[in-house]
Image (cartoon, rainbow, N blue to C red):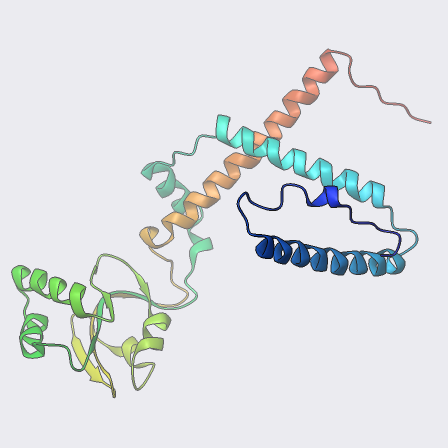
Length: 250
C-alpha cells in the first residue's frame, strides 16, 4: 500500500504456541487491518506535513530529551535525599506562609451517610449523640460495616465544598454550623450526620498539616533542580579541566 509492504517475516512471533488455526487467522487478519490503517495515516501525514519540517532535528531533539530524562531519573535514584524532616517542613511553611492561603473553607469534622434502611438505627442514634469514647468506638465499627460514606477522624482537615456537594438540601448549611454542634438531615434514600469541629475560612492561611504533602513536593523539587544544576556545572568544569571544550567565534 502506497509503496509500503508487509512481509510474512514481520508476523513472526505474533502467534502463541498451540494457537488454533482459526485463532491464528483472526490474529493475523486483525494485525493486517491495523497495519493498513496505520500505513494510510502515515501516507497522508507525509503528504501534508510542512515541507520545511526538519524531521531529523526533531528526532535528535526527542532522542536527547529521552536520554536526559533517563539520566535525571538515575541521578534522583542514586543521589537525591528524599527525606524531609518535620523541622524542614515547619521552616519552609514559616518562610512561605503567604503561599498557602486557602481557596475555600476547610474544617475538622465528622460526616456519616447511612442508608435509611440500615439495621438498628435507634442504637446508632444513641451512639452518635453520646460523647463517651467507648460509644464512639462502637459507632466506628457500625459505620465500617454499613456507612455509604464516612469521615470520622476529626484530627484531619476536609474541604467544606466537597462535603457540601454530598449534603442534602441547602449546600451552604454546613458553613454556618457552630463548632461542636451535631446536625442530621434526610433524603429519599439516606440519612446524613454531621458534626462541626474547628473551621478555617477562605483566604486564611492553611494549617501546616493540611499542606504538608504539598510542601514536601516543593522541597523535593527544589532539591532536584539544585542536584541537576550542580551536576551540570561539575560536568562542565570537569570537561574544561580535561580540555574537552572548545569555543570558536567568527
